[in-house]
Image 1 (spheres, rainbow, N blue to C red):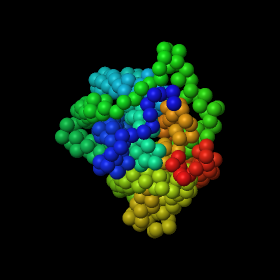
Image 2: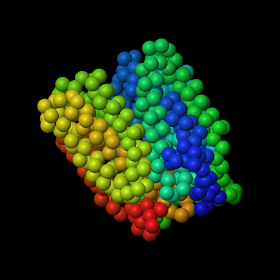
Image 3: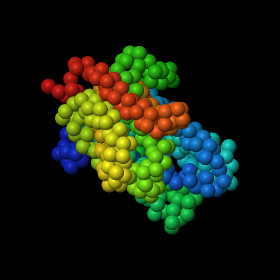
Image 4: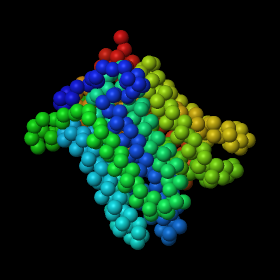
Length: 422
């Protein structure tokens, strides 16, 4: 490894060790959940709020598109910066960018609905959470023993999604009525700082970045690109990671309107969507364990790729198949959300393809995690006019099946199911 951090963990029989969480990073996991709760609290209501205050839907869409672009860029940088400059410094940079963007967005942008300022500051804010959270994911890949890596990353996605999509939404729905919209946004700063305290101060796990001067660190940055030439399977892993959540960001663009045509109200749709991700965070843990037992590649291929392809179609066609039965439609959504977690072992598989430069491999994987934020809506925008709702669904399902085929070729050097197979 270029980093002097070893990929082992201290022996122990504590509860967190048995659960698959690296004991040295336990406080960090808690910090990620709290940080992401603060980061994601406005996701469910910011766009309607802006529309109610006179902004156009095109302006709102552009705001979130720019935000998605900076998330994608920052996601890539998180891996290579972690190895080149150190994980703590990279996470701290993410925290500072988030705070600067948030203060500018609330204090100068949204306060006066100054659109150019909102674009710049919300984009700046988008650099924050990938540098903070995905850098911690690099830390996990170095500290976790190979036979527990699937569970360790499963726990990461549990706290990440639980904070971003579940706790953030629940807290926001409570805070809006008691604090108001703007004060709720300000309260995010408090929660983000609490999360950072847990992850950067209470968390004592060591990590040593690449040694050397500026030239060595700059060479480390280029490995985020050259790694795909040295190990093409890393690129395949990045493509599969894009496919993983593309539908997640495409569905909200057109499915609520489609479901409304089948008698599903907006409130019912939000209930379905929230339940889908409650299912998803639970299965993030389950598939972490399944991946360690059945094999990371096999789990991603069959549960993630094939499973999501089938359940994407089932979710869309469930209103017609069930006679617009709300609970059966929700069940189809829950199945899709559960199998979406089948991609969790990909985070263990891809960095295990290389013996060194795991941060560079994670940079490609993290880029794949950031790109769907605007790839999903772009697919809808490009194709829904010509092929309709059903055509878009078949495109998304076909991507999952394509991902399953690509996963077949992401084999470890010894062609093992996992890095610890006998």
